[in-house]
Amino acid sequence: MKPEPRFDTLLTLTLPAALEDDVLDFLLDHPQWAGGYTVTDAHGMGRGMRLSSTMEQVQGRRRSKQVAIAGQEESLRQLLAALAAQIPSSEVSYWLQPLTEFGRLA
Image (cartoon, helix red, strand yellow):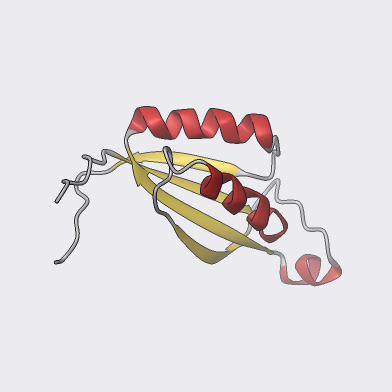
């Protein structure tokens, strides 16, 4: 059995629900950068948040998605550059965090 690579970084993307299919299709097309990831529902709030619908304006938040990808920093930075070139959107935000450990329970 081949050991998993040492993941040292966690990339989190936050995006409007309307961009979910485009971003997930991109990730599926690039398994070298994102072999696996987690997608969760989220709500975006705060200054600078673009609230498009009347419902969003009343609630003061926007439905969004968060995508978490554990990987190696260099690969994740390559992913970000390619994603920005293919889907240049100021509505997609990201952050990179050090990942101290990644594993499986069995």
